[in-house]
Image 1: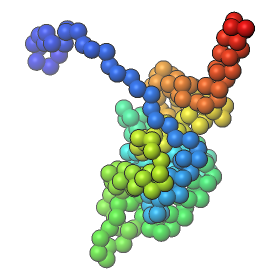
Image 2 (image 1 turned 30 degrees about the horizontal axis):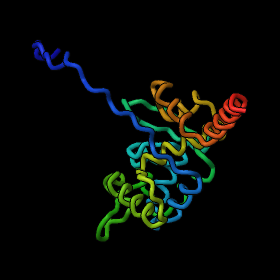
Image 3 (image 1 turned 180 degrees about the vertical axis):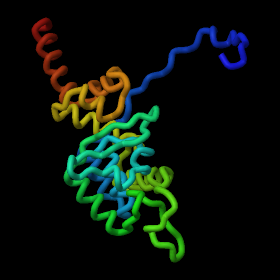
Length: 212
């Protein structure tokens, strides 16, 4: 389209893209990971990622003005494909965020980057880096002995799966996650324990009736 030239390679057959199911942590495993986070900065950030189903970039760029405690929602700005959305703000996370903000009182960033020397945290030039959050998560995962190949994004998968197991509808979860297509959200139906247990009971009944 740009060079007005033919690109025959685009017409070649391509191998099918491999599709893997995401890793999901149980509620107990999420609790164990969060408890192993020593620094309040990382505990607050990763707790928010799980409790609000955020991508890591959405969480690290959160600003103080994005927290609406009157309506109990978080305004996610410039998410994937530059789309904004609102997600529910759990009361417990509001308490954690307020307690953490009191340790730095930055006028803009909810999670300001670490400052050096005598520069106060309230004068940090930008938000916390995504790399440091990933390192903190990996260290906590190792410390609590969980062997699953989880990443920070696994907390977002856990959020969606746990909501679905609790009875929240797929359409609602789709909106909270900011998915454009319901097909993307539907993958979590394969990850819920309740769905698997219910299907297993039905299969046992059907197969049992046939094999008796």
